[in-house]
Length: 259
Length: 208
Image 1 (cartoon, each protein chain N blue to C red):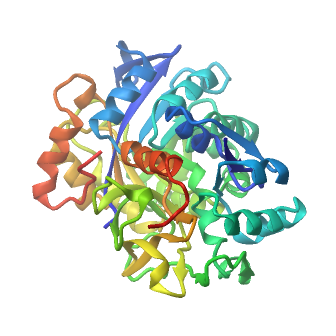
Image 2: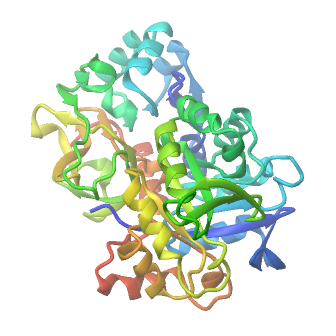
């Protein structure tokens, strides 16, 4: 049986892993390669790295770091932040990333999803999206509007329509981030995760808000997610990946238990 | 020296890096002479069967692949490399492939909304027989998969491992003589995948 994936997210600034709440008050957590090895040895199923200042600085994520991570771990990982072209994607994949994540750029230029998918295969192209709830149902039938640039810019695009369009363009996976839940460790935003999971036939990843193992079960069961991104709950040492998996297994979640 | 066949079918970085982690020397090549001289041959691949076969024809690699697979040299197919060892693929409107193991490559047909195609993620491999390349690997170990089509060898005798997905049990690892081939990615399957690659490096090509 295909297992549900648990994916630690490492936010990177200048080759250091940081963690902030609602994108503020960042604190230093350590070296990205060392943390990747620790989490891979600890039983995570995949990793994701976001260079959180790359986009504003108009440069792609640190390629040297991607190469070092790829040499150190033998599980898949995705990278995001500042990916502005198919050439950027190609460099990250050749450096050893399994997938490249696009977000704001894909809103401005949806063609990059199609071009990346054609060049490298859909499995390499992840669409990250940052929906916020918007009660104007006439404009946003799903009740959620897509934002960009770290939730700062509203786009006028309906979240479910954007997910369907991205799937048609060739995205291989969709990560649903929640600004309201991000860093709060109060649980994933299940409503929009479920709406997206029901609307597309590609894997959906819940992101933002994980604080305890039950939140992951909710993302998989109520949210319909295929994978869940976690950050604070393991970065702080409150949980290990093994503890999370051992709590989820008796709840009927299919998981990879030996590594 | 292990030759990793480069036929412009996806990215071989992670295959190279996994062998490097095992301190095994590799060369990425599309040179028939280098492939012919190798102690082991790895045939990876990601992408579509039609363009992969076209690339093999353009590079003139089909005769050397047939030669080394018949020569007794340990040969490992991965993902698309595995699929095109069979006789034909349903991909790209039906593509004749290398026919080194009789069989075909159908597409997953989802049986419910839960069956997403491609299958992406970790799934279990049940070993239906022993093989030197899976020595000391626990039955039902999880390996990493990314694929929409799956190997269907004509005779179950070629099957080494099976996996359940989209309402069927398919052959996720197959072999014949000096040939082994995985639908999953051992190079992305953590420690258990490295163990499989280490077994391959230590294999003499005899499938006893």
